[in-house]
Amino acid sequence: MMSHYASITAGALAAGLFATGTGFAASWDMPTPYPDGNFHTKNITEFAADIAKKTSDSLKITVHSNQSLIKHPDIKTSVRDGIVPIGETLVSRLENESPIFGVDSVPFLASSYELSKKLYDAQRPYLEKLLADQGLQLLFSVPWPPQGIYVKKEINAISDLEGLKFRAYNVGTERVASLAKMVPTQIEASDVPTAFATGRVEAMITSPSTGADSKAWDFVTHYYDTQAWLPRNMVIVNKAAFDKLSDAEKAAVTEAAAAAETRGWEMSKVETEEKTKILKDNGVAIVTPSDELKAGFGEIGATITDEWKAKAGADGEALLETFRK
Image (cartoon, rainbow, N blue to C red):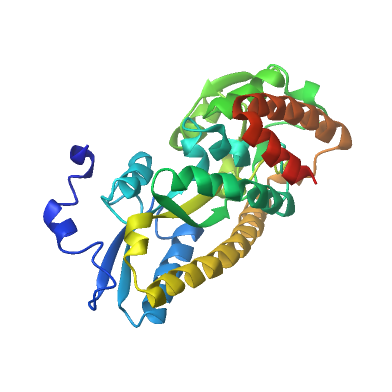
């Protein structure tokens, strides 16, 4: 396993990543997946600064952004195995371990920030239990902007999507394509402009952030604000590392995490507004879906939710029951 983490030597670990609560300062390395300009990274940088301030530097967290220390797929395992004490990951990346991890990415289940927060509140106890079983502790979780549909034409009903070549990037988006009778095509984010330009894809579902970053106005005309789902990132800590902190340091981490969660949700909303405005300013028509289109997506969402529930079993059923109260 250590070959994945060659950048972290055993000597660095021995130097005291976990050495805390013993009268000398602790230094924690924190891998994150996204670049410094990303709002998630900005929020985490503030979280780290908050902890340093609250503990008078007895606990310092060094943020290693943009997969510079550990690649995204390895971050959660690295925290679990004690390679690093803390890290950030996309929650739904872990869905292959348990469907519970993927509930935030079930399309059209929670189509607003308000519903996304309600879904997170329902999911959290199950999420915490899954993590605890692996010696991990959830500190906070923050959503990405909601996912919308980018196309080169008007769509007023699900039938208008039929036959379109659709950019899929995971099982969920492939299922949406299948139920809407589109043709799914696997395309990485970096290849999106070329794929549209060459006609390999004609539609995609992604956030305003990705749309603005990829200059979607060069290849689409309409953005439908479906708010299909709001995938979340989470920050987790190795429980053994956390337990070695002094009481004051534990309190500082917990307080800073609560503040980061509140701040992060607000930052996500601002990101949505800013990036949607960039799309609009560059000539993309920002459209609220028609009632007919909403109803069609609602049916697709209900089908995928039932499929998710069947996989998630009793815990999934109880989670959804709490969410729908």
